[in-house]
Image (tube, rainbow, N blue to C red; front, side, top):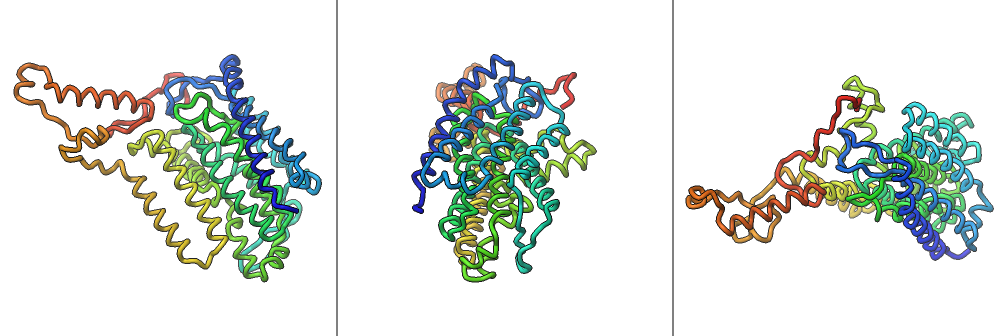
Length: 447
């Protein structure tokens, strides 16, 4: 069978196009339906924004799977495996639960139960963990009960990790798109590099997930015109989890050892998917870290783990002094570094250049992360060409102080700074040490 690169590209384009075209009508529907909740204290946007973007993303998912089922090479995935149908069933349930939550609000425990039911539906249709490769030990075959519990746990953790990180415009969809791209490279290599047909469904899931995110991103980038809501964040989290379960729990490590030449080589080849089996750190490490820190923080403060707050990683980036757009790009950077670093390590884990490259890029990321803590002032000759936050404060001249009117040059510079502050309200730039949040707490609000 030839490599269906063109078919994957067609599936990606169709999914992205359908998602993009549906998002506009969905936005109008959300406004008409009143799916525009009031701004809460933990929100960073300044105007009520419609949700229900997950409706368009679910439409893109259905379109992508429908097109793939009629393509010459990809239709064998539907004929040889029931996993695409299992994914669609679980996605429909989690999407419906998210739509209800976006419109009327659903209790956190009810949502958790719904997530477990959606994961259980996928397990009943065959999308479950069958093998657990353990480095240095071998392959462990869990019982049906153990496999079910492990699959449900992985799905629930991934869904909530993506849901927790959905706090800035374009953040969740962009990070998941990066993770899906890295996961596609790994699954595609498993399928065509080693000839393992069991990796084919995960490859398809990754392509469809990329299309869903790419189609929604133009509408969701800052300033966002629509939010994906829980209907979208839980949906893409479930699709990501389904890919991790498929490529990890469905691929027999013994078969991989035959393809790679031995157990040791097979163990090295499976390195980047050991962790997704337990915690999806290699593909969504930042959301999972945010999830764990949020649970510890809230429990330490005597709050419920599901209580909303403004302590997420993206909130902290804004408090440091990063603009909205820069905070999103930094989160993109770390997600790409971890995801693609794991894939590169799986290709050649004996290369020191890969390790050194990851370490060097990590150092660059730390510098970018802490950059607002250092605000060097530009020399006088460069005052006109640098952003306002790096300019020197101009003291009023004696003549200006006496008349009360600033000099012409100073007046122009102050006007530019004032315009920059206005732009900063929309996240275009970060100026000074001012807080990025406005206290929107109300007397009748419990958040």
